[in-house]
Amino acid sequence: MKLGEVQIKTYLSKSKIPGIAYSINPYVGCPHQCVYCYAEYMKKFTAHTEPWGTFLDVRRCQAPLHPYQIYHTQVMLSSVTDAYNPYEKDFQITRKIMEQLVFCQAHVQVLTKSPLIVRDIDLFKKLPSFEGALSFSSADDSFRQLAEPGAGSVEEKISALKTLHENGLKTAVIIAPIFPQITNWKEIIRLTRPYADRYIFDALNLRPLYQKKVLGFIMRYYTDKLPLYLSIYEDKNPAYWQQTQQEINAFCQANGIPAQADFRHVFKPSVNV
Ligand code: SF4
Image (cartoon, rainbow, N blue to C red):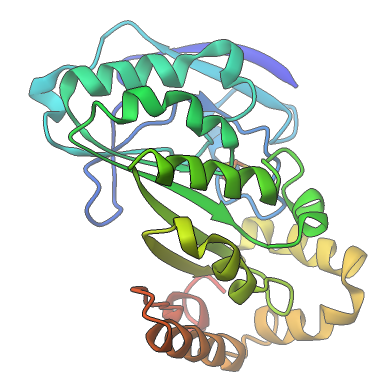
């Protein structure tokens, strides 16, 4: 991993995510190396020539966050990196930002695939509101090792979720991206249900930048499923996601899980597929 530093003027980026005012990305790059990484486009804003996933820049900012900017404002970490990647253990840049968020009394949501999130529980408890969201694309760690080799294991993420929950903090489980005929979303729910306050679902959405890479991954490791993937992503057949959306919503309703899957953005052929 090539490590570096960049200076920035502010940590705050306006967010287009509903309900989130700002996102904060303490790093450029991400060592989790997810095969489907949607953040790879960030590389064009850097001088890096190395492949995405092999460099990590710490973002340093001289100007501290101030309450007049974000007092009781919803802030999310992170949108194009993982703030709790393993290098954070040494850099502690996310922790320093979290201390500022406590000072500003911002409402904070953290999205991560890393068990390191539990390190900052002492700070999360001092915020006016906090939600820790752990993301799972599979309940099977052998798939996780192939698809997200740098991320925390399934077991580590469940343990982190449990620790957050036992500390009285709000938690969410993000079941995403759902890989057709690979992601066992019912098993993820079974394993995490005691510790999850809510669930969010998202489908594997293959944007042009990484469609070839993900289909190559399926061809290499899950060859028998390739015809289905070609039907969904090359022929743009919406049936699979329509059916999966119905199954998830029926399951959640039957089991009292307050969640609603909405995959229309994936199976509308004119959008991103
Ligand atoms: S954790 Fe997010 S940003 Fe990091 S590699 Fe995976 S998808 Fe990309």
